[in-house]
Amino acid sequence: MIRGIRGAITVTSNEESEIILGAERLLKEMIASNEIAPDDVASIFISVTDDVDAAFPAKALRNLDGWTLVPIMCMKELAVTGSLPMCIRVMIHFNTEKKQDEIRHIYLEGAAGLRPDL
Image 1: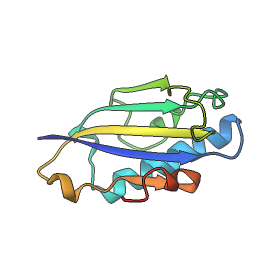
Image 2 (image 1 turned 90 degrees about the vertical axis):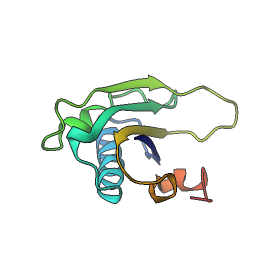
Image 3 (image 1 turned 90 degrees about the horizontal axis):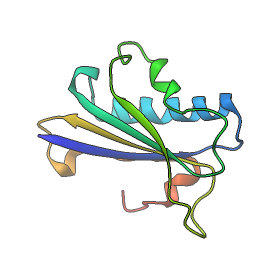
């Protein structure tokens, strides 16, 4: 079964180091919380808001041992009026035996308010 894991984090500035560190922190938490191995991942999508353009957050995944072959794509989030600024969102698609209610979606920093139900 392929399942999706959602996650998001906000960064405090549009600087390369801040973007990479924020994305790396989010990815590490998503991976650890859901016990994901690189070989089980089908793909990862990362979106950013318009105000996050100083770096590709996908670089963060390349900092993790064993993750260099995982397909990853960065894209722009829809620019909806009033949406959360300075936000990086991640969707990981991976093969697992876990049930939908066993998946841990991760929302950090200002993004925690996006899905308080999770």
